[in-house]
Length: 325
Ligand SMILES: Nc1ncnc2c1ncn2[C@@H]1O[C@H](COP(=O)(O)OP(=O)(O)OP(=O)(O)O)[C@@H](O)[C@H]1O
Image (tube, rainbow, N blue to C red; front, top):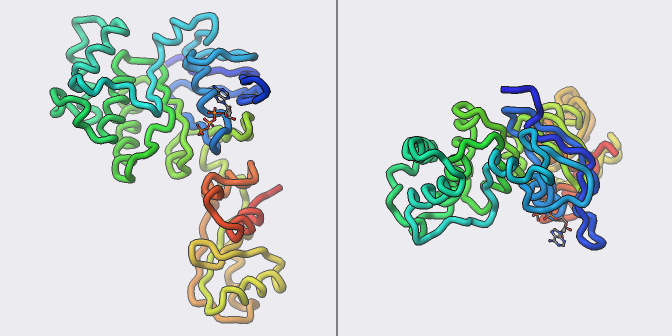
């Protein structure tokens, strides 16, 4: 594996009329890495991935994929990448294997290896025994698995996955991640993906958080969580409203009911708990302390979270308290 970045992006921009979808982003993806692009709706994830895949022409800046320029060397880029986009592009009237054979021809996979390769990628996503079934009979999860197999067929250097598990049930999502993890062990490949599932972003080696067309921060999930610097404490009390008031008055902490418990953020949560029992002035039935999640990281860097879009104002108060700035 070379040290050259698998993806290198400099000042990449895209405007649609007055809309600045991507405002000049810079980042590099290392060879062999699983790199995640995390951001709320409309943040510019799909536009960025589309520019890297040569499907959308940048307004400014530059990008290389597998060492090739996405504008000047489109064909070379296309030969070196695999794509799994949100909208399925499989032919439902063809069998699973026929879909892959068609793709192999398009990509010029040598005839003498194509049979073995089709079997290898279909076995990887556990679909070999369904190779002769028409794709229209497949479930959503099976179609997504077949798309991943197809994206891998021509042995791309970089696999782009746009929300690979969106719309799938939790069991299938976890199976897809099993295949992705297996893939990185078996193939010399770099994976660039977008997701809005925080738990999935945890699987990535590094994440770029993108908001309003800008990359806000890039690091490993562990380092990002450590950077928040606050723990989440949840307590169960006989009177939540009174507990929230007491936390504000005695400790200067903003708390809110979140997931059925009074929730707040403090540095060194475990050291804080004994003080809490001593000074809150009311009974505590149960307590839990947890390290920051990627939700908290997201809030810390962007001022909102993907989950917040569906959450009430009570959660917002807690999220604001988690925020560093
Ligand atoms: N073809 C287009 N024409 C005009 N505006 C566009 C076009 N494509 C994207 N945009 C705008 O660019 C911005 C970024 O969109 P983009 O689809 O890249 O975001 P995203 O992060 O992928 O969001 P989502 O998760 O909803 O797909 C949005 O404001 C969107 O409305």
